Image 1 (spheres, rainbow, N blue to C red):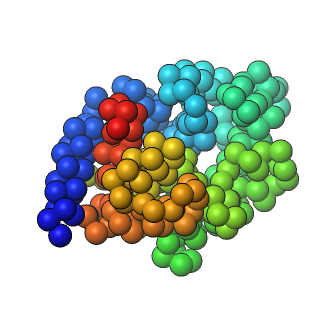
Image 2: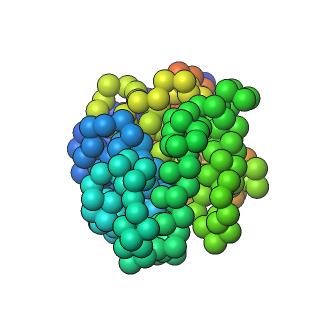
Length: 255
């Protein structure tokens, strides 16, 4: 028990260190932080989270470039962009996410905002089905691909196929978690932060295993469930605050 208490204390210190406004300067969350309107925050955050893999400086640069292509008015662009305006997105590329994917995303978001009440309604509606983030992510996946887009499917994780859904879980942390520290937005209230799941990636996974928080070898949905359950023992109300600790240890401290 003493070991667990020591580990909790160590991780709490790291949360305190990294869960600070300065964190925003090096993180893709800076992209939605530019906006004030709820829908602009939701859409810009979703698009920034979608391309959040690879070099962090490149992620931020490309996400800001994408916002410029949307006239820095993502909500208005999603609702009203003409075919000609959509076509200029063809030039966008981030790793394997290309212009065709980008156009599909905008069209799918248009369907979500015009026919489903917006991103918040879709995620929260899915959460209500089983009171779980897994059901929220599964429901979102089915709504997002109501219109055909086979090529683009690889860019939205499918938890029903065992994906860890790192970027979607990170996005939900941004939207739902609210601890007054000034990093996460806490805009959506119907998904409690106690229910959030860890955005598991190579960094948080490796650090989690080194600290004995995770036994499973692959970074899949079962690993997300395992490590999040462990973190809930440290803080049942806000287990995902430890994302800051694990990520900070991995990326900034090369733990």
